[in-house]
Image (cartoon, rainbow, N blue to C red; front, side, top):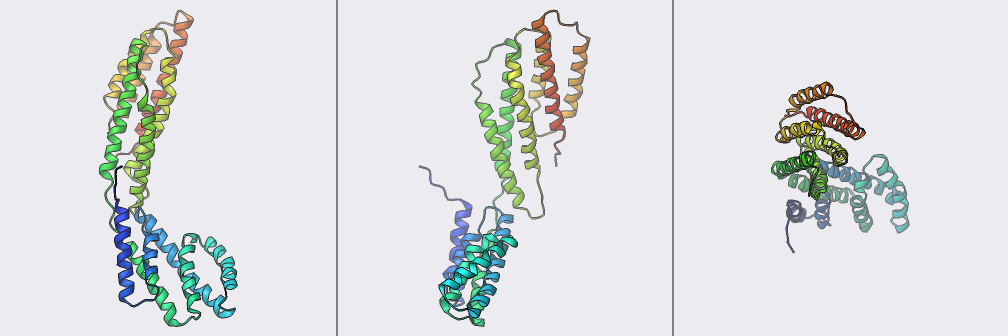
Length: 316
């Protein structure tokens, strides 16, 4: 069994220890809770970490306010804790900070344990909150670059696209194929995983709404949907009409140009020229030839959509 420790695990371990040491250095009561806060706030992206930290910070401050109102106003009793939560949780839902309910409950129980609420106790809890969340935010300033990982997904995805095209070309020319189709299921997986990594990369940049790789994988996803639609069309064509070989030649040239660059406009021009050549050819003489050419016409229309989608990809 392969054992691997990730960056998030290392940051959580180091950050937790650091938060407890700092809280203990300042002689804070319940100093171990600073480590709990750090564990909860370390996330797998900078944006998620900031969102988690802000939700927990405001929920904790709100918990201090509620503790003062309920404990000092009614009394330090277990029933009061339940009563307070009946009001506190809906308020966190309203302010969209429910992520901080568990953390703030720890702060509330600290105050309950003290059976008193002085300025010193409040400052102690604020100190725990600031140290715990602050250390987590500092730990999350470093996020490993995902560029090499995204590039690997891109390379493998384009290899699979070429393989699928090659199999379609072979079938158009020979009506035979021994392909098992594993690239189809593998491509679906690569696209989903690639989008996930690309989205995480977006969340590691506060001022970026999306990036090239995310748009790239979304584009490939739409193109792959077309590929899945045309595969049954190709395998259902039986007669060896001339147009099969013309389309196979076009696909062969297209397969050699599957790369991150955008050459879609060039191939759209060539495809339209191919369509004009089809129009100039004699009409089909048999029903089988008519059906085959109709299927090929549908195939060409799908390829056109494939190219139009690629044309929309903005290379930055």
